Length: 323
Image (cartoon, rainbow, N blue to C red; front, side, top):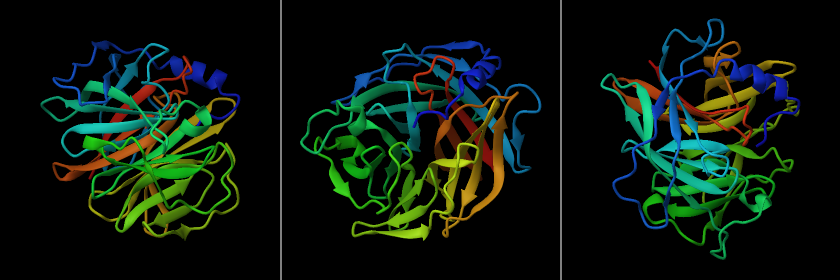
């Protein structure tokens, strides 16, 4: 989704924390799968910014960060969710209607230092034609099911479509059950993740649903409608231990209070203590994607920000280890 209103001054303040050394360009993929197009970018190293910004729980540790810088016409903007493929790769989706994939680059200590092999492909409609209308292509959530299928949730025209296996994506996606809820046009299913028996969807304005191939059931009913001044769930991924999920949330309170946070989510949709909070004067932005994997006895989290094609915002990928 687009960032909250009246954010120009806030994003300008964020730019004061944006100085970073260039890491050069991502390494190209040795082979590009059929249907995918290489994407170019510049990478910059990113830290947590000025003291007083980031607040980490005692069991959380920052594990590196990068900014992905691309030209205005690139599909590497407005990235709205993030999932890991289990082999060092990742896939993300944009609210412009593209899938983007690449590989994480870690140093010898396991810190995130870059991404490589970036490529993209256009999402398609159920008739097989490429999405051309923003109202059709406002993709916000992404899930990889245990069987390997790629699910994408859309807002404006609220729905979830199954694009099949990542290695052999369907040109004609299949609609699957989605929550029977009157989402507003630009506040839909921002969070989407695999679940024990299917997938879990979280609404930006509240509510959590567990879905199977047959139907969706309410796990946590929407409460009083949230405002831009409240934390809103913008991304969701399964805890690799199998015990719940991780949720990323975003909040804006004018004029300059821009925050993101990561919390665990239980089976009942209840949120646990804050594990990571990002705010000014530290590094922060419109974080909408979260992905988790087990690594060296800890849980590695990656969070991704949506720059809304706004030159005052950034596409950031940050890593944290949770023990």
